[in-house]
Image (cartoon, rainbow, N blue to C red; front, side, top):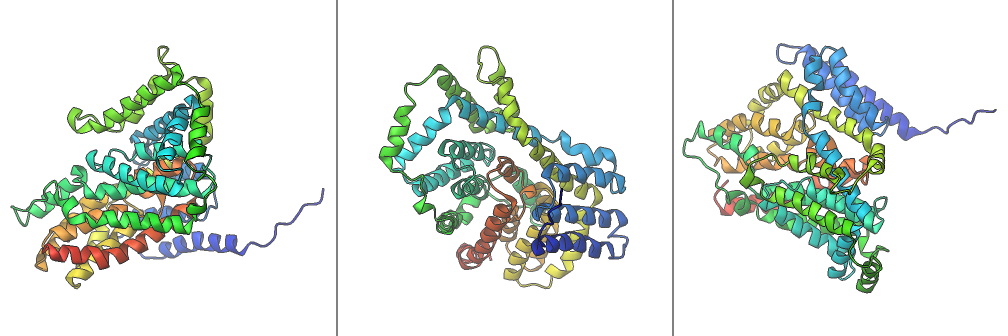
Length: 466
């Protein structure tokens, strides 16, 4: 049989050249006492895998498996450190969230919720997006960001109910679930990240404090940013003309077709409420929010519940590759921290920052965060950079609040899904392609930098933070 030759693909060739060329250039950088052989190898492996992922040149499961294995066989770190990402709760939370969404879809309860919401939105998909953003942001604020698994799961259920999981509308909805989970969280006092920053500031200014309402007070323009970003997405993806916006009567008719509530639907509602209540009351009971998705979804297999069986598990198997990818990505931050990559970045940047003006320092923090997010976890980023940033701001005679809030905002300054666990959850549902993810976040980052300069900085000037 005659073999058909594939046509020359310039884009693919360029992708390979970039994915292999950039790591090769890094490999040529000489090692020093600070930039050790292990750190150089770490940077080469990490950047190569990130570029291969971004260019879509390999299966995600392969890349997820490759990262910790390459770290080990190239003597970057020990096998225990490289594979310790499997001890993290993220993979198990993702599996639980997928199971939760699948059960809500199988029982039909998510269809009821979606059609009811669309009725209240007047049948307008755009209006539903705004309602979703506002309600999700309120939940995010009052749960201190603990809805970062819940909102994407609900959004995915909406996608399934509306049949948009493979359409542009689904991409927008999943992106907005990330905005109301992570961007909205910047308005809340998030102790995990605020704690280390305040502690660093108090080494120089013992009376320094960031009060519980300060992030909301100083960051309230972010609400306007989120609304503007959603408006831009609706224009970019032309969701106003979406064929699913069938009007109130259409969704009312679809809801009525579902008939009376079944026993399984009622049990599914109770099942969902248990998870929501657990997340909302997390500050009271003190247990980790992750347990809400690690434990409760599996109760559906209990005999007295009966909402899931072996066929439910089979529906999760196609998502197995993304679990390995997620764990592989988590190993980037773990290995980077163990090698002291943060110390290297700090050593390089401290003298550079010292030469900048106050406004330039705030923008530079954003730039550093964008780069560091590729290699570090959000917590490692915040805890590692708060000390040098506090020192530089103090030397410039700045209020420490503005630089620390700028550092806090960099957690949402992303390009790839592995940088923040919440976006890994979103990517795991398979609605957003890598190209969609990168494009939407590049757009958001550019918009935010402009918004930061035109709105946030003047707002902080009014409060005397700059």
